[in-house]
Image (cartoon, rainbow, N blue to C red; front, side, top):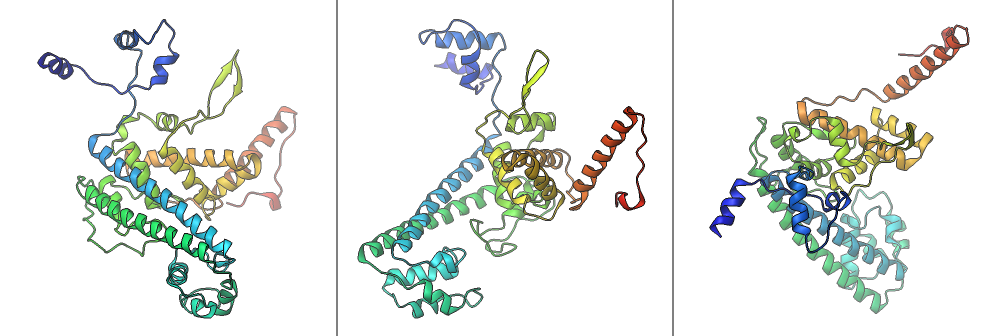
Length: 375
């Protein structure tokens, strides 16, 4: 055992993708599998997979567990809504989120035995957009015993996941506090987030934690929320030097165009299939950015009109990844160039192309005063 420990201390252990071993040419059998891997490693044909440092790996495990808890809780939310629909209680039509203050107050009252629509409608929040009369009309259903039993069980399971989710958030808060700060931002005080948590946001000030350990406020990029940045940093770590350029980073994420070239001709430029939580986070951020009045939003909408939503999401995610890498590697802050930035650049590219075509045909392109590009 001592000899094996000395051997491991003198070697560098690598985590290698099994697909890289399988696709290499050569003779291999299950009996000589270890010898084949050792031979490939001795020739330098095996490259180590990316893995952040141990501290980030601990944070990554907590965040992945939190994502699993959120997904499991969403299943019970869907079952709660199904039980309400089977009772002909159309709560989702008058309340945008049944897990909000109004929705949960009404659901808990139904489980407790209150079935009067007027009484249930009075439990709505004062700032609810729908009136009490509209809510009462949606709550006139058939409260059958079997559906009430299912509703009670699903609500109990949902509450159980919320308890575990709060415990996981406390563990993540404690883990983030152990990271060495890279900026002069102080640790956030317990129980004092910048704003009231919404949706699946944690109860602590996650944005301040992320800015303290990374030195950059990534949430200034349109579409990048605190949870999205948390997922990306937990997957890629805090050391940007592991990726020499932004091209290496986007290639590892699987967001850059492919290069399938045969005989000097490009057969296709589809992105390769990569299972990456960070890439999925960038895609979700691209969808969110497409709904904003920003330069990234204009870029996404222009591509969606021409190429369709899937390709527009991937292209916008690729641009977000390059912006993220620039801030990640060099620091600084992101400033939105404006909603008309990409539209102006697109018009300039069209004019430039038309001018080249006109010169090739022996003509000159002259712009009229009314057709000049407004800067």
